[in-house]
Length: 224
Image (cartoon, rainbow, N blue to C red; front, top):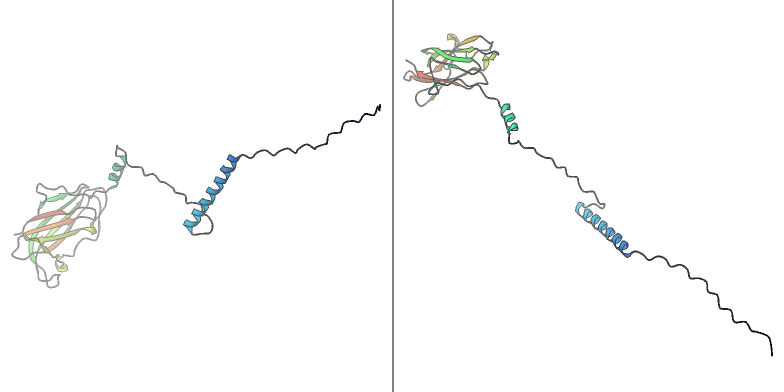
């Protein structure tokens, strides 16, 4: 009997398997892909609108608020304060003045007419040899500021239909038009004036404006 013992066969050697890579997060990949697609679409739309090859940023819009006047009306009061009101004469009961009356303005400027008489212009006047009514315009500056008397204007009409009456300029009789001077505070000036008036007419209307900032004072009446 043999004492030789056959050892059991050695099992084969297998190297250990390499570690498996971690599984990818499919949700994250889907989100990244969606962001890339959205960016590409935005670029394509911008290029199509502008017509350029490169995408351009959208313009910035600035919104400006408009503040309206509140219920207290402060803004309206300020606007009303900025409006200038022309001085007007104190009107008589019927809105006009008689030929001998005096119109007084709010700034203490007074205008009056006097010395009405008929005449005929000389052959050197303009218009020449024309019947007219002659009178004196008195302007009294009772205010505190100098009055620009060069702005004095006088317009006449005659008859019930209001025919326009031409001013008469006759240097031979002292009718030289309006003054060419400034009227200081506390001073007055008398200006001779003439307006065409046919012999058959009696009713006249005279509108006097003492300066550029005043309303006209209207005088009316009959001439003998």
